[in-house]
Length: 388
Image (cartoon, rainbow, N blue to C red; front, top):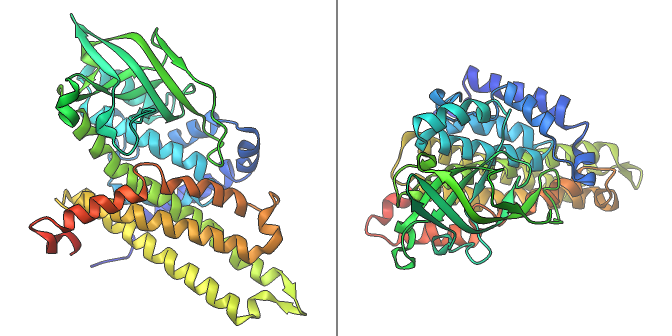
């Protein structure tokens, strides 16, 4: 098993690192403090291909493996997890549209999304359907050559600032459960769509989060993604990659926090010597680095499984998401502790990295749901294969 990166992967990582330092680092704190959605910076990321990393080439994307995409996302998240997380969500939605849209819809939206000229939101969660996503109630009724959509979505990243919504809506009756859900590409400015207030959040402040209402929203029938009833399967396929993406953002945030802590330990002096000379703090740094490397390797293993189409890929994506988001937050928290009181003030980026990383344990399926997914797979008849 070769753990070395290829030349192409190193080049992608280096380009992303340079972009993050030039376009994200100087502004991330201000975007966070003022709640600014940096569309210009995201468009610059799109010019480098970062808005359609694994979207199909026939939709304008680069068609890269998920493993390669993690290299890009990690480097950007080390500087600005919030903006990077939105870019990963946009990548997921762009991939879904590029994979399942009709030729006409893909031809129109694909290049616009992959370039970052237009942006996408992923609309699954509802006020009463979070972890139990299959219980969603938003409906899409076929009427002639259109669908009429009614309902509401909640906690939608980018809502009110994006251009197209990848929407999951019920086309079957409530008894049909997950099998009655269909996916759609909905223009974000379609008549009948309304947006709630911008939520005030602990972190992720460089991207807006709002509810979305749908009141007799009409879209052409060819805006359906895949066949009727395939929406939940499409949503879950999207979330496999989304879980890797968010796990990668946690690894990136942890890497940024660890680098800050490492430098601070050399600079900060107490009792007449740098705090780097105290063994107790050395041990803490060593544990942080070990947890970070373990999380990174688990994320890359899950990405490789997804790229290979392994039948247990979903399990590994859940494992990676659970472990990396917990470990990433813990590393950020320990780095803040090493900074003492300085870590708690906004002059240093530690408190922002920690706030941004905290929500990763909740979204794309809570870590409790990740444990459910893993345990169910292990308790199936082929349990040994679930952890090998």
